[in-house]
Length: 406
Image (cartoon, rainbow, N blue to C red; front, side, top):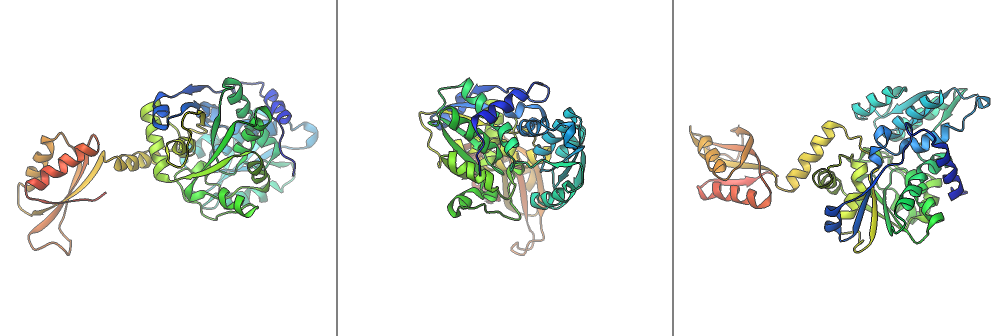
C-alpha cells in the first residue's frame, strides 16, 4: 500500500483557500508544562480550529476535489463527533448534502453542532464500529461518497498539513506528540515530518481503554475492539486500518498509552495552567507528556491539542474525578451516636479548618451500625492533600471514627 507523501500534503494545503473552513492555528509555549516535564513544551492549538478540532482539514481536502462530473450529491460519514462536524462543514462549503451516522451515546453538543453545520444526523449503535457499518450501507446508494474518518489517502493528506505548520513554525522541534484514534491524524503528521526532517521524533498516544495500536504493531495487522471504553470519546474508534498501520509502522517512533485518570488530570492541568479547555482526546498528548512513561527531558516538544469539543456533563465528570485524585474533593464517613447536635458539632470542627461542606447525608440503614448509631457522609471541598489531612485529623481527635470514602 502506498504511503501518503509530502507533495500530496503540500497540495492539500494549497486547497485550503478559505480560512473560514481551515485556518492555521497558533503554537504557544507553556512554562508550567515545561517545568512539569523538564522539556521545552509548546502546544499546537488545533482545538481553536473551526468546529473545534483538526477534522475539517482531511474532510475538506477530500470533498474539495469532487467535481460535477463525478455525480456525487451527498457525503456520508460515521463519527463519534469531531469527524462528523468536519465532514458536515466541508460538504456544506462545497455544495454537497451530508448524512452523518453517530453512535447513540454521542454527546448531544456534538450532535447539535453537526446539524448546525448542515448535516442530517442518524444515531445508530452504541459504539463507533456499529455506526460505521450503518454508514457504509448508506454509502452504497447512488450519488453518495463515503468519507472515512481515517482510512483515506486524501483525508490523511489533509490532516498532514498540521505537520507542515508545526515544522515551519518551529524548525528546531525535536519531538511531536500526537493522539491516536484511527490513526489518520498521526499518519498525516508523521508523513509530513518524515519528508521535512526525519530526525523529528513522532510519539503517538492512545487511551488505555481504546488502545489497539500496540497490539497491531506487534502482530503486524490491524487489531480491533468491539467496545472501547474511555472518557476520550474522540479517539475511541476501536481500531485502525491497514493504511494507517502502515504509516505508523513506517514513520512513528513510539506509541504510549495513558489511563483515563491521567487524561482527566491533563484536562484539569490545561485548564488551570494554560487556560485552555480541551476534550479528553485533545488532552491525551499532555497526559503522555506528564506521565512517567515518556522521557522528553531537555527536548523541544510540541504536544498537539487536537480537539476542544468536550460535553459539559463529561467536563463535570472529568473535573470531579481529577479533584478527587488531588484530594480537593473529599468524602468522609463519620460514625456517630444518632443524637441532636452531632452534625453541627462535626460541621463546626470542619469549618474551623476552612472546609467548605458541599453536601451531607445521614445513613442509618447499615448492618454494621449498632442500635442508635448512624453515619454522616460529608462531601467537602479542600485546597489539597495537606488541608484534607488536617480536616480528617480534627474530626478523629474529637473522638469520632472517620473513614475516607474516596
